[in-house]
Image 1 (cartoon, one colour):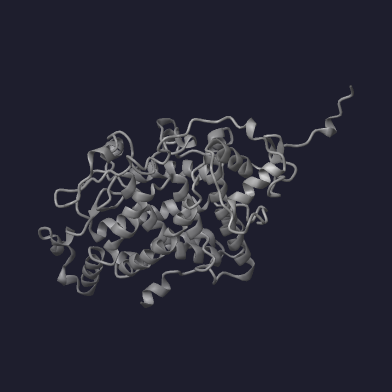
Image 2 (image 1 turned 180 degrees about the vertical axis):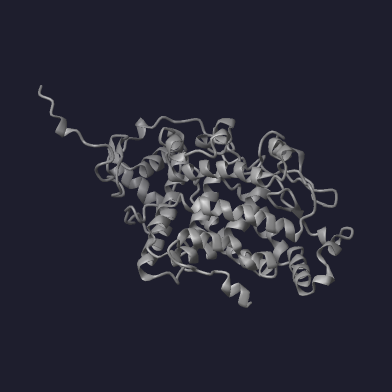
Length: 443
């Protein structure tokens, strides 16, 4: 028999028989995409039962394939997917770690206590655990930490466990997390032992601690956005700066939240440098006096006002509305990255970009949603179908508290100078002079 190489079909060429999206091969006897393959396998393996609100007449396509799971499963069967070809896997117990993830590290002044059955082992991170999905098991490793300053592209190319875009961002997050802990150290000894010191309550937070964390986070923010392909395609540098300015407070707030959860606290706000904020902090000792130096006049009074806002509601409501809620939700690293991307490419808060770039922002926002959806399907994390909706419910709450954080930082002279932003502007616009701090100076 004559073999003609031209008759070979390149992997990934063709359309999914179920939803019409790009297929990556034959699964259970049918040409299908990874999403429908994962959906069918999960539905059969877990014997999931669905119901249709439209009497089984829903249209299934790549844009609305998750709208009705009953009709999607029915179409999988109609196009010929073979149930008997699914190898029933062991049902993963406590996949999200929801039964043992709550580790309430309450301080001596807290009235909260955690049941012994819900406390994780000391060696296991209770939140955002790398155990949540198989592809992240090796991410928090000495091998990864040893190459955090090197090129990520070469290591990712040959790494099958991080094939999904969100998993690639997760690996980058782990690199930056280790880098952040080193950048926040002030001595060589702290750098050498930063892994042992991470998460320890060093002292009550001050405005200076918030400024220190912000300086480091702004550097990491700029490193992170360089990983976004769409950001590089934006035509106007001014639009890049607008995106950065809009996102900066959200990035800072989200990383503070995640760091708090990683360390297992649900009644504190823990800054990445180890300092902490909780409801009784303002009244402990003579902490208040450290903010005031009346010889400096208005500056110190503004910092005092910022400190009072930082240790009172509405800012402290973050503990109940975000930290504790995210803890109960069992947030994963992939979902953290999705929140970042959706907040950065928010089409409503970035409506002031130029028309040419508005379409790029909109497409990037849609891509972030699609990546989250496919990530759920690949890792079988949205079995009940409501997890994605609940995750998206965090977005308006994060936006609300980011505005509260901005109102606090606007009172701090170190934030108003915005030297980090001037540095970023110089990098983005080397051929022109853009003084971003002029608006703040007027204030």
